[in-house]
Image (cartoon, rainbow, N blue to C red; front, side, top):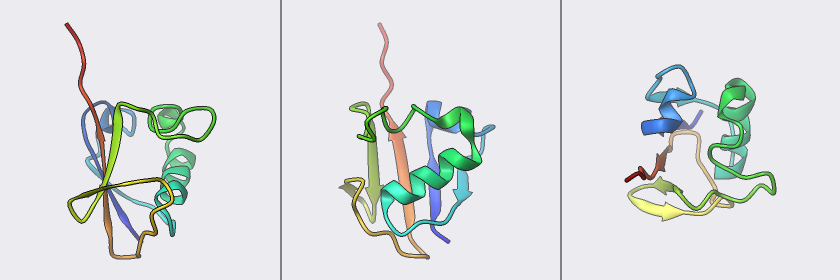
Amino acid sequence: MPRVMLSGSVQQQVGGFGTVEVAGDTAAAVIRALEASYPALRGWIVDERGSLRRHVKLFLGGAAVSLDKPIGPNDELYIVAAISGG
C-alpha cells in the first residue's frame, strides 16, 4: 500500500500521525481513502469540487504531482500544506 507522508495542519487532522498507509492507484484515490479513514480531514486537501486546494501541494519522488498521478503500492506521497499568517 502507498505511504502518505503528512505535514503541518494536515497531520493534525489525522491524530498527529506523520505517516499513514492507505490503498489507491492515483493520488486522488489515495486522498479519498485517507479521507474515508480520517473524516476530520475532509475538505483540507481537496475542495467540494474535488480539486486540490491551492495551499496544498502533492509530491512524489521529489516532484510536484497532480491528483491524476498514478501511485504505485511502494510509493510515498507527500502532502504539504502551506503555512500562512500575519
